[in-house]
Image (cartoon, rainbow, N blue to C red; front, side, top):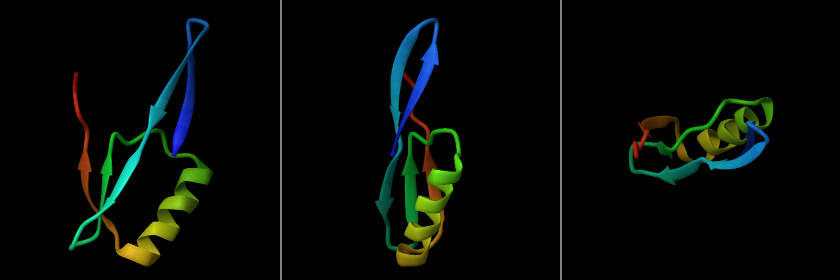
Length: 59
């Protein structure tokens, strides 16, 4: 899932990465929750289990 973020007349592309783990799903670099993203995550949770880990890397 990619989100376009506008700030100071610049467009910055942000990505969320989802991984399947044994216990459920892992979300890396989460982005703002939209209705579209919520629907995608709900479908992933039905297939692979709930999000059990969230990784938020720093620079």
